[in-house]
Image (cartoon, one colour):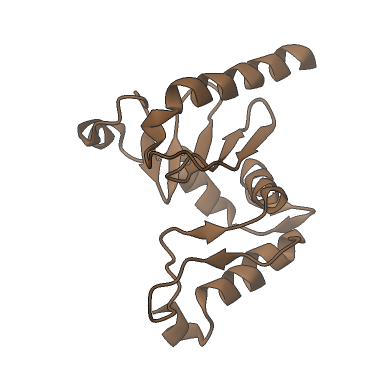
Length: 168
């Protein structure tokens, strides 16, 4: 649909509207179906540094190097998260009190942390209160974040708390 409306592929739109403006080191690319159509609901491939640039943009209310890259209203919508009561029946036992909104998982913790998570452990973890972005490449053999949440999420939180103590 995006290509029909704009005449551009998903990767062209993302490059033009986001990653070129971030000064990305490499082009982003998406997983494509057998006909070559890019899948916009996942399969985004970026370098670690470019993922960090995007995470920092989200931490800074959509701004990066003085430019509004992502509309602040979109970032606010992500940070507010989804309906936590509706999230409970989904059964994410490693994410109590969390919600999901616009491809981001929202902790609703005291730091306002939120994360983009790939199914094999890759992700962007943003902790606005700690002024921290953690980016991780991974290739866990099991395709579910529940397989490593018990170690990863407490580790991210510990780093954030350490940074906040060090800043005092």
